[in-house]
Length: 343
Image (cartoon, rainbow, N blue to C red):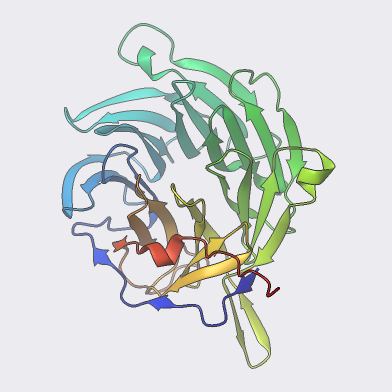
């Protein structure tokens, strides 16, 4: 992927949110309905912010670290706990319900608006689907349990499609309407451990990042013409005195309007890419710590950035964990028109 000759860098980090988590930030996500932001952390909390107003609207404290979170509606969400537990959290009434449990820490959680189900992935090597409507009644909430080859590291949804990335570089692609077996079983195109998978907003494929400073662009369609479009590129690397330092790519977030995407790495940088034209559009100025998570708001005008040490170098002194809200300028995320060849 080529970088534009001189990639512009936006000055400043954005607006820092007050009352951030006191330990590593595991994920953050904007609501589909407003500028509410849901944040999970190793400090055992799930917090709800109004990102635009910089207000902490609510907080739940769990018995252990929270490894992921997602919205249900604007004032409620779900959490994935290191205590093996899946919870529904209603901030408007401060009410917490347990949907169920895995046999090991729950690493990822997604809510499917298409299926009306919560999907969780765990280090117990299973995916589970839950119906949250059963949580307050006598109905069973567990819809199904689906074994995976390895521990689940990342999940992503688009429409009825679910992409599961596990340890051992496995990628399983499901149709939520028939979870009995994967539609496709693949291996990652990248040689090293998968860190993050995110589906393209247009539903044609997914981006997958690894611990070794690379991202691959993959397509669901198995036809030769579609598969010929797949590629991988290097990013989040530093070259000094002839030596390359390579950083994990922890986060991928797609812009909801333009389909361009941001990546965040342990190098403290956020880059914006045009995947179709294979260009880097933008690089934001360096953050004080690793980029642990990224999320664009529903209209793409805001980008939430978690600057939070991810312990890639073990226990060491590090900057405080922080969340920054950037106002996104169109020039940072809009694909540049291809220059026409001279006649």
